[in-house]
Structure formats: C-alpha cells, structure tokens
Figure (spheres, rainbow, N blue to C red):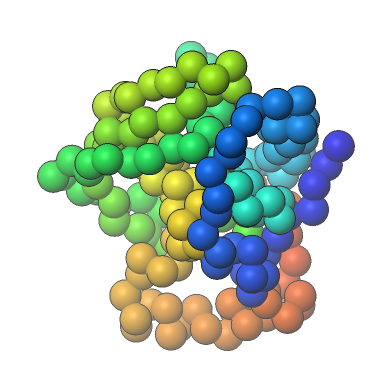
Length: 179
Ligand code: NI
C-alpha cells in the first residue's frame, strides 16, 4: 500500500517521534509500505513522519546508487557521536519538492538501532550512508535539511517553501534521488 508523502508545512514533520515499544505485525506492515512508497517516489531514504507516522523508524535503500547496497531498516535509532570531519553534498527531500541545497554534515557517525527482527546494533558508519542516515534521523527529531542552511539561504527559499506549504507545489517526479 502506498502512503501519502507529507510535505513541508505539515505538523507531523516538526514533531519529535516516539520510541517503538514492540516490533509486531503492524510495524512490519508499515515498513513494507514505506519501502513501497519510497521506491514509487524514487527515494533512497524515507522516515516515518514523512508518511504521517510519528514513530522512531526510517528505511534506506541505496541500491540505485550502489549495487552492493540493499534494504536497511532502522528502528529506535540513536546517534551517539559524530566524527570531526565534515563534507558537503546537495540534498533533496521527498517532503520538500523542487528544492535541492548543499548541506554540510559530519562524514561519520556512531549509531545504535534495532532491525526488523529486534537485533540490536551499535555501528560506526561513514560515507554516503552516514549522510543519508543523518538526513533521515533528523526527520525523527522534527528537523528538515533546510534547517541546516544559512539564514540568508533560507530566506531565499521562503517563497518556494510557502508554495509547498500551501499545496501549490506538490510532490514532484524527480530525476534525482531524494532523501
Ligand atoms: Ni527527507
């Protein structure tokens, strides 16, 4: 089942999410639907608030960019530390159609999380996966990538953001992969 992707201006995107207590059939169904929704939108990452679910869960699949990658599910993730190095990358977001901007982020993180089987991990991650995880993790905290931009950059985007919030700009068919 495809979910409707929530776009900029929706309260759910600004809410802090709650922990998942039990990984049951309903969570498995949400995860399955999130992957379906993400693939349909040409996304490589999707966080639960983007489909109107205020819970600590996001999914990632970098396979379109890296064949050795595949489905990844992050339940109740906690980033415990960030590396010292930072890099720049032009990010987009399924919830912020038409806007793409350079965002500076740490190149590595340490993250604890559970998978769909309840296995617990505590992993050091770097490279592009670390970037995508940070973008999706932000969604769980009610943070959007435009929040990382300078106030000057943000003020230049104000009109476009207003149009997204009013529904004038809708979820786009993008040629780039969105997060
Ligand atoms: Ni996003």
